[in-house]
Image (tube, rainbow, N blue to C red):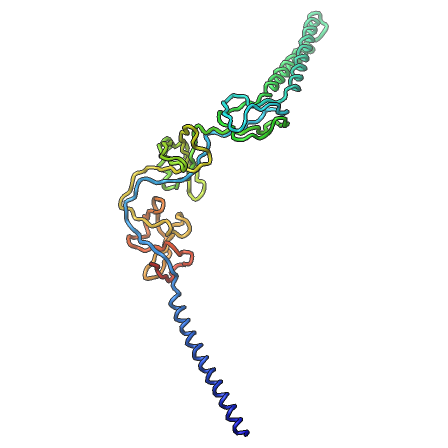
Length: 351
């Protein structure tokens, strides 16, 4: 009985040992297969494009935003209560037109008081002049009386100017874009009352790359295509910034006529500039550059290895950039996947 039990136990142990050895063997095979797959997948997947020579069109387009010809917030020169507003939003206003009026009762009182002070000073001066002839007053007293008359006249002039300032006058012609206050509000000097925008012409503001801005001049004619209107409009360059705004982009303003006020400030448009075309230009896609184009670095693939390469660039043609040094025709540059690369990384080119 004991012998049979022992045999059963040994048989169970043998089976267990067999299963353990089989599992260990399978685990080893799986690890070997995973290692093989991992070794095969160490290459980083990238997309590439060849460096090519081509003829480049002389035109390049830049998007921008339309700005008003002029824009101004009209405010009162003195403080007071706004008792009348002659315009509303959408009204057309001419330069020099009164758009509102402040209460002037207190100012009129100031004019009356200053006129009364002037009359009193003039009367006193007459008495001093008569007394001076008989020796009743000194020359100094007479001079002081004359000075008081001059001061009184200046006060009358100042009071009259302030009284006339009760009319709020627009300094520009244009359309009332926004009303800032309502009738009855008490405003301080300089408080905006309405905003007036002149869109008789508009300025398309665009940012032009450093490689192209040197070819532009104030007065050049430019084709402008508004997003909301069919056809092109002839514009004229009226401003080229002397300093870059960032990323080596220079603000350029192109003035265009605005017949029937179809265009509005804030709309988008595209300016198309003309320049002499170039033939046999060595180019790469803009996407090939690591970081920005100004960094002048690309990954070049040779024998499935990506090499970080410093290049020299020329003109920027939108989606293509001219290469003046560091690459040759036929070189493969990485256009997608650079974020996963370092110098001399092994790569797999996706078709």
